Image 1 (cartoon, rainbow, N blue to C red):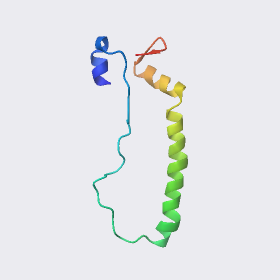
Image 2: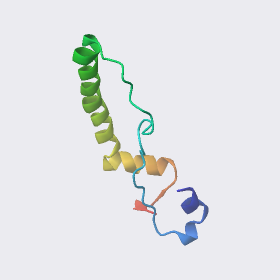
Image 3: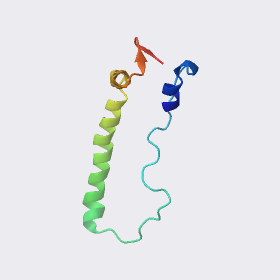
Image 4: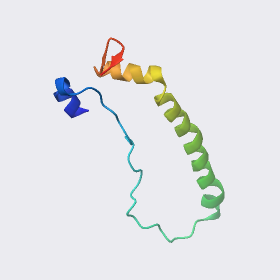
Length: 84
């Protein structure tokens, strides 16, 4: 996006792929310590529900066309309702 903004005469469009990248450290070895019953049966399921519901809702909101258009307009990447 920076290159496109710097050379607008050379750019027809910009496509953003895999913008989230990888979460966490894929090179880290998992801990071998045992989970407690509280962690296994309460905290871990609660965390998974939170991730699925709350983060799923946030992701759904962020990909709405009106929201995308609003963000692009706020950073100057929209000209007369046409994406650059």
